[in-house]
Length: 370
Image (cartoon, rainbow, N blue to C red; front, side, top):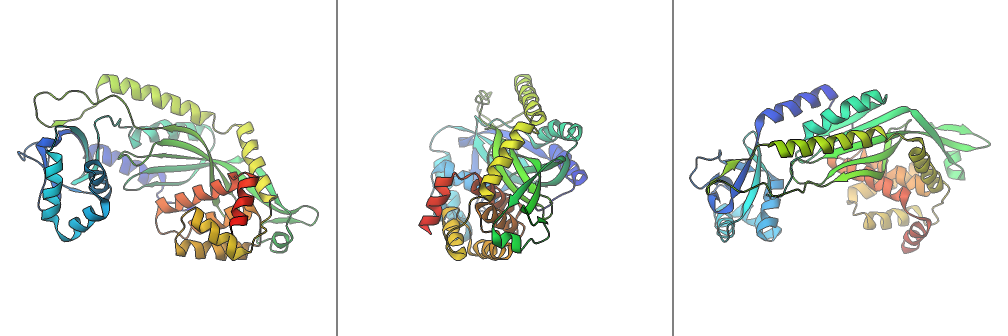
């Protein structure tokens, strides 16, 4: 898995962002896009003019129902025309939106029903529990749109046994027993993620890490909470207001993060781990009957892999020698380590987990389609 930031650097950046971010409740008729494609208040005195991030531009296009390819073309070639389009639709009806800013950028354009659940609160809820559980935080990252924390409990381990001839022949550094085959030692882990900008829910997912190569397959979800709540409230007068946490929201948030801590505490449950191991072993016992190029091709189409990713999976599946459903998953999770972006690497880890969790009939259908 990609390692991302160390915990000290992550904590420092989370705290820096707490001090540098602001939220504004914005009546759409009181905000405008400039000829530079920045966002400003109509009177110019409610919040600093901000340049929108690519994600915020995407949200703006979706909110105003401007086709994204056309929006992007105007942004790149005719920002004045983009401003005319955006302002016409912003001012067509009186609505309220939540504008989230960080430093000098507008990072999100959201519904006024969006409930902020902040990254620093997740970290403060998670770190003590992860420490008390004896986990090791193996990877963490803060991207433009998400926070990720991935932790492994090294004392919770099991073996996945590979019995296919090709895998036994190419043990590849894993423990090999002539009577049992190749054994992949795996450990239990949890992945936590959140988005402050509307790019998905707060989530806790289980994963298995293959210890010798640090491949990570994301599997069952244990918790998922979307950022939807009550409307942010009526604006006083008709101006823009900075959106600050009130006591009701703080109490609601406290209750949610308490539940989150409880779920995380119970995440490293032996029964849950045993179920994941059983799924993984079943995948290891399910052979690939299609040719390697064919199974990689149909998998790439089903899960929308790029040509580069497809080539990487083909290379790792061929080199690994494990021609099973588990082996295909490992080839994808190994390819995740070649991804340039942390977000995409995590998506590939999740696809690897989806491969493991495919029921036998679906994996058989996948192979027939090849």
